[in-house]
Amino acid sequence: MTSQAAEPPRTVDPHIHRRRWYILGVLVISLLVVVLDNSILNVAIKVIADPDEGLGASQSQLQWAINSYTLVFAGLLFTAGILGDRFGRKKLLLFGMIVFGLASFLSAMSQSPGQLIAARALMGFGGAFVMPATLSIISNVFEPHERAKAIGIWSGAVGLAIAIGPITGGALLEHFWWGSVFLINVPIVVIGVLAMIFVVPDSKDPRPGKLDPVGVALSIAGLVSLVYGIIKGGEDSWTSPMVLLTIAVGVVILAVFVWYERRSDHPALDVKFFREPAFSAAAAAIGLVFFALMGVTFFMAFYLQSVRGYTPLETGLFLLPLAVGQLIFAPRSAGLVRRFGVRAVTTVGMLVVTATFLSFTPMGRDTPMWLLCGVFFFQGVGMALVMPPATNSVMASLPREKAGAGSAVTNTVRQIGGALGVAVLGSVLSSVYRDRIGGNGVPKGADESIEATLGAAEHAGPSGLAWVEPAKDAFIGAMHYAALGSAIVAAIGAFVVFRWLPRPAAPAVPGPAEEVREDAKV
Image (cartoon, rainbow, N blue to C red; front, side, top):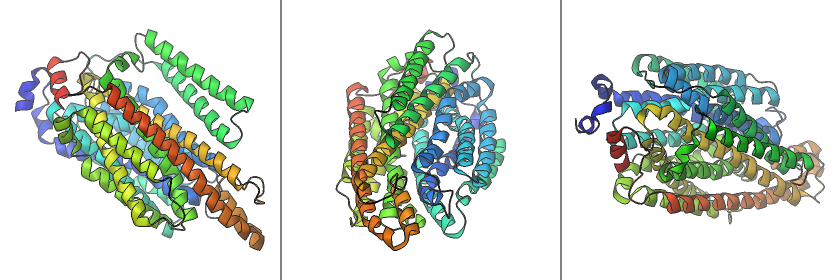
């Protein structure tokens, strides 16, 4: 085959090559269960916040139910990628899926917000071994000329999960208790594990590096401190000494992490890779677009349910155009990159995402839903023009033997961006809402979020009815600020990729020569 002739030192085994698309299908199942969980949770957060039907979780606890997963996930991705390269990616994938399934069951059985946060952290632990393994296996199963298309399908699976998650979650919440949105993961995990055993091949780096427990510990400590400080800043005050100290400690620890990794002979994250524009600019684009997207997704569940009055199932259906846009354009992004170049495609994608975020700023309580669906569709299109090309640019910049490390970097910046997006934009949402609802007689504690206000109004009886309309107006105003913040972040991402991504194609760092040249073409 042409692809094998172009890459003689590292051809794919013919038996594996013949079943590569079946392998991709199995990997997509494992990807779906990880992404599905987060998209389901975005629909279920309103119910989990309810003190009667859910756990009575506060705005901060809801954010930590999301961030406990993403922080553990992001912090362990470095180690998970290295362990996969060292001991075998299939072994680590199976391990991650089993842990993820067990943690999903524990999440469903949680009796308090604290238990849910802890179970979600365990889910993040399992997911950390799943996500990098799927992408690194793709890099070792597909020849370079097909890899961009495979990564496009892999990225499109995220769009499929976005569609299935809210709809499935909404349907479950209409018939079962809130824990069912986590319990649904268990049968998917069982199917995925059985399919992996018989279909997915194993692979590993023949020359693995050493482990870096110090680097992993520093990254986890720095991220937790930084994001916790940001969340507390939104809840309390950005001028609070404790908030400022927590954020400062996080920044210092992350600075020490970078310093340590630069001087280590076996770094968890080789920061030298970031000297390559194709690597660093693409990774930045992934992080920035997820920063913006996750923040918007967080407040849209409250907008559609608490303000507009739609059910969780209806909320999921309204998010369907976002997934459709991704499903249509993600597999086609490789062809657009071949024609126009990775810089042009990702820049246009970031600008489309920016425009969709700006479209949220004039929306109110009576905005036509067809207009919102249109915005969601183009948001999915923009994501599809950013994620697959940026991901392939990162993977093409590394030798195939280091696919686990490259996948870890890609997914780490995605999860860090998403976690910070929820924390920062969630803090903005909470701060602005609290300021705008003040003066309406809402008691202390009930002014933290729209769900807390509406819950207090319901329990207060007739006197609480006066809080409902101001609460909805306050939330709309806060949502506009959060959407504007998302648009600014996405615009920064557009500038980054336009300024630093190579014009014709993504160059690669030194590695197997033929693979690098072939990868650069896509």
